[in-house]
Length: 360
Image 1 (cartoon, rainbow, N blue to C red):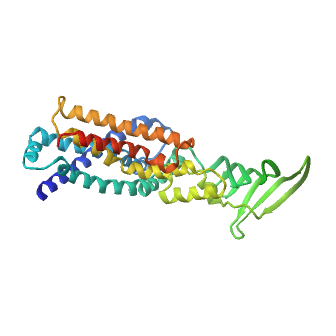
Image 2 (spheres, rainbow, N blue to C red):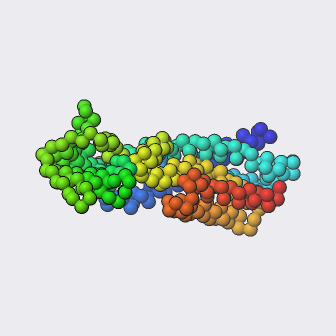
Image 3 (cartoon, one colour):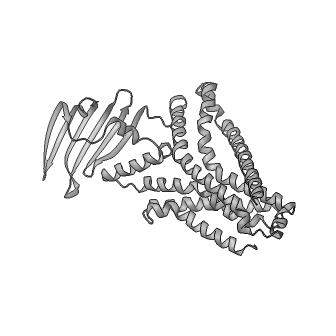
């Protein structure tokens, strides 16, 4: 049996690689045709375009891996079934479970690698990709971040009209403090034209502004040319991080961001959902294989094309189901962990039922 296992694993892996390369080639051609006008308009160098698609590949590999694994499992099994080799294996005493073993074992390793790849490799590449988009195509630039607002603590809201990364200076700033016993009551407010950071003292200095204190129905106003704020809890790097998209964060950064959001009094649900969903998506290949293999071991009318079509529908249903569950999770209906893994749990159970109903 070891010889058969090695043969199945080899064919399985080779087909996965071939499917991935095919999908990636199709995607790159379509994407180039879609964005070629923008590349020309922004006069993007050819070397940068090559680098752009080089760092775009990890994200596409992450998305295309489950479909490639599904296609590979169907193709290898369908080919063996058409040649009556699956029938021969069953006649020799090999059960469906034993036949699926090398595929499942290989897919488990692929899934574990996908978790690491999607959690660390893909975000690192996305950072470079987004940097190229901002610097060469001016897509979503944060060279001077605009309209930034966040909670610095449970009772403080900071609003920044624009922020220059290179000079570490903010412009048009508003810092609002609220009563901890009555969170809707503002007790003080700072408004300034400019704010700069002193890396030596780790303090922010506000320049040309107004300081207001509110007590009952009275307001105390004080103009200032410059004032040092000692109790701000964010740094220039924190401002930049607040503009970084989730797709640019590794699993470690997502986990830390969720902790920072919680400490600041914000709701970290969305970040936690992204964290758990990214891990869960790494195991999507196992779900697709568990669905695909039982259907492809028996000959059906329509052949391999029909089988692949059925499983492709199941795969996209899984992806849509995951998106819908995330929407419910973001609205607070389900916890982040359940939201991230809900689609996997439901489709895993459905796959086991499908396996149980398949002739062995």
